[in-house]
Length: 152
Image (cartoon, rainbow, N blue to C red; front, side):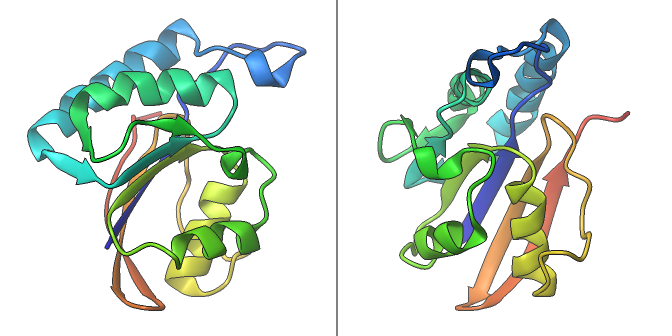
């Protein structure tokens, strides 16, 4: 099983966090990411994003490069402050490849927990627009297969 985690692209500052759109730079970065992903022919059974506008916009752009067995959909469990327990529960009920578009802090904490078994051990820097492919070999054994991130 592959778990693809994508942090939304750079977004504009706004008081209302739920309607913050991608910035012009974030939009361009995610389009470049989609161009990189397209020749990889990634297929997933579920393609989920949080309820925030910036993740929906990120998912919309990347959807042109990802094949999904089910329609892309919003899921409140992928909002920024989601508990890792909720995410693990979601994850361990799945056997097929999935793509989740979300936020910090849970993306970096989930990678750390799955790979190093310690959510507080920094494993990767997850900048806006970063995509990580984690591969599950056995029920509780995860490795990072690859990671795409723009240079800062």
